[in-house]
Image (cartoon, rainbow over all chains, first blue to last red; front, side):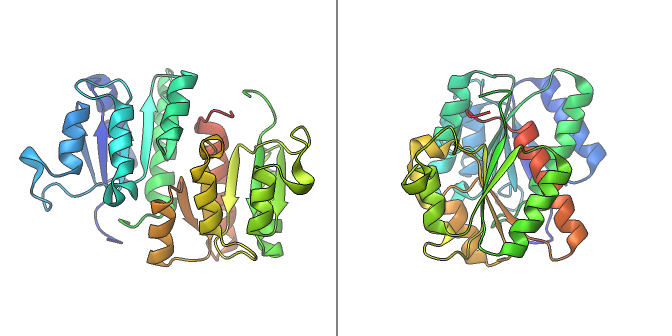
Amino acid sequence: MKGEALVILLVEDNEDHAELVKRQFEVQRIANRIIHVGDGEEALDYLFRRGQYTDDEEYPLPNLILLDLRLPKMDGLSVLSEIKKSEQLRVIPTVVLTSSESEKDIKSAYINYVNSFLVKPIDFSKFAALMDELGMYWLGWNTNPYK
Amino acid sequence: MKGEALVILLVEDNEDHAELVKRQFEVQRIANRIIHVGDGEEALDYLFRRGQYTDDEEYPLPNLILLDLRLPKMDGLSVLSEIKKSEQLRVIPTVVLTSSESEKDIKSAYINYVNSFLVKPIDFSKFAALMDELGMYWLGWNTNPYK
């Protein structure tokens, strides 16, 4: 899919954080489309094309998944585990983006094969810098089969 | 190990490429120590502390593994597979850094749970920019249980 639109799936229940991420990627202009879902079940519905997400033209597989850990219905670690069990979805870089710095969460994410684990900076300018960095890294430098 | 020295294990058989990576990280001053091994078997000896690498003070587990694919004795994908089978080593971000852009290599690396896949730029200034970026991202922003 080289040269096609770059899509991010943002799995985040905090509307303010989601808005911040979206705005920052708009400023940066690296991602062409950010799809935002608010809970873990909806994330898996999207990725496995269930329910309202059966149309793969309208709902393409993303080039990057940004995944919060504390989520309604199904927590982020369970979502991650399902993503990495699937050979089709495993190839999509899945980056945890969370407020948690708990050693247990960090270790569990790596045990479940997370691609990268990022702690949300509280300071806004650092948060913006991190969004720039992660966009450049994952959508620019990194290579995956969908890119 | 927060606040301790940051260590990179560089698995690379091309001496010129290894020298370039080391020099760039020296300029950047993010990593405190780069340990360079030239083949896949030695990489696993280091990580599993076998042979000359039994002393864990002298040979600490790295915070980041940079792994070439074409390697003598054991290829990079087999090394990656062994790293990701081990729960202790799985938590170390393992980034493939290769000249290969083969779809098969890219897919196999993700199937074996690579953290990230980077193609070495041929242009030197791009190569230097990539080293800066990956050092900042993995040793700066990214969190793992050994950091």
